[in-house]
Amino acid sequence: MRLASRMERIGTETAFEAAARARALEATGIDVVHLEIGEPDFDTPANIRAAAARALEAGKTHYAPFPGIPELRAAIAQDSAARRGITVSPEQVFVTVGGKGVMLYAIQAVIEEGDEALVPDPGYPIYESLVRFMGGTPVPVPIRQSNGFRIDIDELASLVTPRTRLLVINSPANPSGGVLTRGDLEQIAEIAKAHDLVVLADEIYSRILYEGEHVSIASLPGMAERTVILDGFSKTYAMTGWRLGYAIVPEWLAFPFGRLIINTVSCVSTFEQYGAVEALQGPQDAVDAMVAEFRARRDLIVDGLNAIPGIRCLRPEGAFYVFPDVSGTGLSGADFANRLLYEAGVSGLAGTAFGGVGVNHIRLSYANSQANISKALERIAAFVGKVAVPA
Image (cartoon, rainbow, N blue to C red):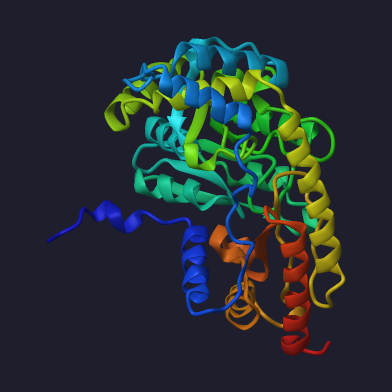
């Protein structure tokens, strides 16, 4: 049987494949420390679970309105006004199946055959995959450790062409933990306005920030009408399995977003959305405690990696990943990650899973306990001691 040719253009998310390899190795009796998946190891807070359970018992098991239940759309609008400083109508809010739903609909709505989209490199691989799948051309925007994992504004400007339609930004970023400053965002906004670009602002890690306050590009003058905000509940509230994301879109994108939801998933599970209302409107103590623990884990893993000869690791300002340069060991990122799993029992990802800039890097998630991170650091140090090429 013949597949549609578009299937040759679709990629994948390597973290799930790496996790499967690690589990297969565990099945043989090998102990593996999992640092590959970007999933908080905390349970969803009890008040959120209870709210969803109450809704389930109350019979909230029927179809929801396709954009989301009114209570959740209003709660998201209020939260965005408080945290982002932007006035949002609930009619501009769409509840989606995870953050990937936002990516899919935004890219489907604005990218045509031959259009170009600027995507971060390193960056979440699904941006590039979906652009290609829709017939567009992803254009990598290099984001380097030497620049603190921030976009080089001049380089970004040089990559814009008459075919550029979309710019994707992610701050705090996966895989680097880099954060764009207000000054960065102001300059990016000027480029977007000058070239009439739509911006997809992936802000899924906006609450997991260790220094300063989150700045949304949509809050800058002239940007709300050209920005799609991607956010959700998976990272902030440890709700990955709930698959609840949301988009805040300009008014001109509301109709196409709604049509795309109707044509794909119809709506998001009803009772879960009541849990999401509680997440936003209930106590935030669990979030604060989780971020404090992530900060401690960040410092543990960064200090530990930088104590290992041949590894250079920046201290991320947000999210829960490190993206160290391992070239000083004499190995590429891909060789390092592969051998680290099979020779040391630590599962991470090659930097090239996120683009070409990461050839000398690996990504490690510190969404794991401090005990397991310490165990991983011991194993990494022992592994490097065996394989490192003397300077």
